[in-house]
Image (tube, rainbow, N blue to C red):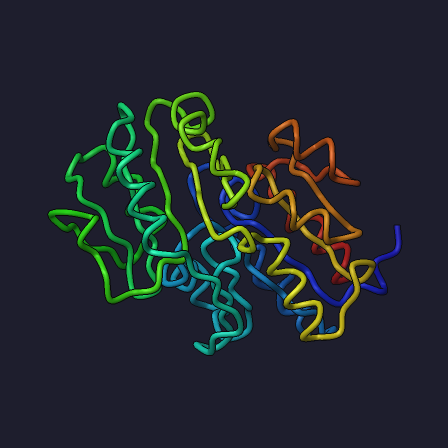
Length: 265
């Protein structure tokens, strides 16, 4: 396969670029440098918070475009490229639903920081993996003075079976995505990684045929659909494997970097 026409590469992080311990393989960096030398635009696209993504990729943070919060917040060198926030009244409705789901913990993903009201240690352990800046508040319903990029449920009983059914009815008006085994993400209808791809393809005059993307879970679906070179990880959700054109080795086999090395030459 020839990769000579590729101008833009986007990759999910957890379950994709990062291994099961949420670590980045050091072999990524020399390959990344070669891609940059070829003029290829590199996008990290994740449900993670921007500040957290920046920390994970701190060594190259000024050379990476960050599509954070499932594409609702796109930033390059601390400059905002795209913001798609949610209506506060809808967020309040989602909070009230989440409060009544057993083993589920609500997170408001604001532009400034994330907001939670639970101090459950098991929940906070997961929160700290993906959110660098957060505040524990007494009542999420009283949070204001921020733009809400995403509403997330951390569901320790399993997002697909426990939380998703409660929010499925919002799919006509919002983007509702099972983004991991214990994660459910709800965003503005126009906020997803595919929309982020459209914004960046337009900005940099890149076509879908010149785009490569990697993903493993349902919040990656639209991003893969906007990329001709669409790769599902070997460890990906079955529905992602169905729509991807290609399969990469698993995240624990450094599958993304292996393909990137082929592109870098």
